[in-house]
Amino acid sequence: MAILILAEIEPTDTWFTRLIAALKERKPNVDLRVWPNYGQPEDIDIVLVWCFPEGAIQRFSNLKLILSLGAGVDHILQESSLPIQVPIVRSVYNQLPLEMAEYVTLAILSFKRRLLDYQNLQRSHRWQQLSNLHDHRLTVGILGLGVLGSIVAQKLTNLDLSVRGWSRSPKSIEAVQCFYGHNQFKPFLSRCHVIVCLLPLTVETKGILSKELFAALPQGAYLVNVGRGQHLVEADLLNALESGQLAGACLDVFETEPLLDDHPFWSHPRITVTPHIACISQPDALADYIFEKIAQLENGKILEYLVDRDRGY
Ligand code: NDP
Ligand code: OXD
View (tube, rainbow, N blue to C red):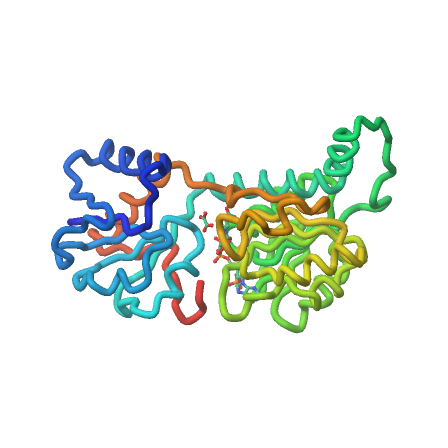
């Protein structure tokens, strides 16, 4: 069984170095190859992928599994030369939703308690107590109630927040008001003081964080985007902040990553930027997950977290 890490890896990338070490530690005899040194392409059974060069995958004619090293698979499905019969599985395991919940909680409480305003005041040495932004209980809306969104929503119910979520199909989550489908989109949005994007990037969700969505929120709402950069229409966000329709945004994902040096988000006083770290796989946990999936494949078991190519996630 030959496994190839198919990703464009910077020589200085310590995360991949740690992943390779974790894989070899678990199976010292593993036939592990790292792009671009794949040897004979027909040897490769499994590819572990993250942001790989266009067209690279089609040369591996004996593939049995494509495993995304991330929870998202838009980077795979955008590839035009994907072998149709090969299953695609994404990486999600217990620790990821918990880390995501931590990040989203941090963003929401920072907005609620005006941390950004206090940081700006601190920079000018000003001691000033600000009034609360909202006198009532905040309503938080989660776009996407999948593996991550459903646990984030559940965890948020432990805070003094009203939590609601929106998905494609109906859901039932204790203490979370669940909405679904196109018809319930606007009613869902109408009360969200904070909107959190945890959708996968698909043809349907691309550009969903747009002026239409912002206009449907109560004035002064806050955006947390931890989905994908292409969910957001960047110019619409800047306009909504300018007009006061949105009070601020916390962004972890961007149309172009790394965020370009001259991008206006870097220095915007109402935007918090983080470099796609909302939840990062730990190499040890990921190595365990990879071998678990390979064992499922070898033993002919049903593969969990299989991607539905037609749905796009
Ligand atoms: P899942 O596939 O488990 O869940 C996706 C959710 O989105 C489901 O509830 C689904 O509805 C809903 N959805 C999809 N399309 C639509 C639509 N057109 N209308 C309404 N709802 C829709 O994904 P995960 O929770 O595992 O991950 C979500 C995303 O988070 C990933 O795709 C990735 O982009 C991002 N991510 C970001 C990370 C970061 O560090 N910033 C880390 C990991 C992931 P239904 O349940 O009805 O199918
Ligand atoms: C992702 C991930 O899909 O980091 O963004 O897992």
